[in-house]
Image (cartoon, rainbow, N blue to C red):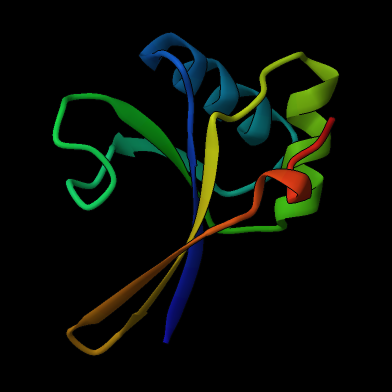
Amino acid sequence: MLEYFLLTFDSSNKSIKAERVLRRNKLAARVIPVPEELSKGCGFAVRLDGNLEEAKNFLCEKNICPKGIYKFIEDNSCRKIAKVEKNDLPR
């Protein structure tokens, strides 16, 4: 089973900045296209294969706040997506 988080942002530029911040802090992060389950339009998100709390703290320090955070769970050919609640996001 594979689990990871997907962080969405208001712009592609913020996604790229977020990836840079997370990678500088030794977290496994990379920019990917937003999956069509989340958005029919174009755009980029950051895939995080690491500690979500650490990532949120590093991003908040740089005033880069995610628009949404989703947890992906992939098992064989099945993929489940759960939205992380707003009150779980940093303030």
